Amino acid sequence: MVTEQKPTSPLGALPPRVWLALVLLVLALVFILQNRQYAAIQLFMIVVTAPLWITLVVCVAIGMLIGALMSRRGRRGR
Image (tube, rainbow, N blue to C red; front, side, top):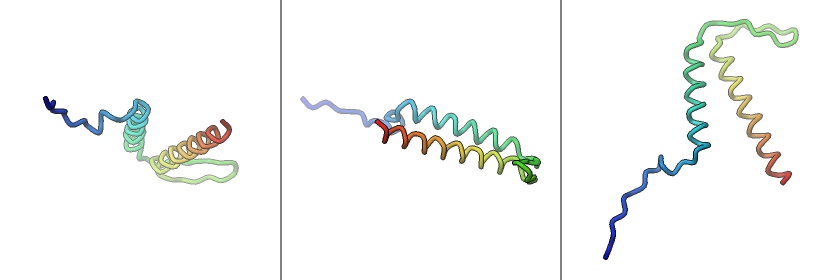
């Protein structure tokens, strides 16, 4: 007797941490798109006026870089 198997969805195969990352990414994108006015950003003595969305994108990218660097360091130490 041959049983038919239903094709599995690639979305169902994603682990929960990937789903969480996708949800957080969507929330970050919505937040960025809703904050498009200009803002003055000061770092030490330097003041830059830039669209807030660019600043938010840069901050998210820096956070992702820090997370990637920290996860690599943790794997090597084990």
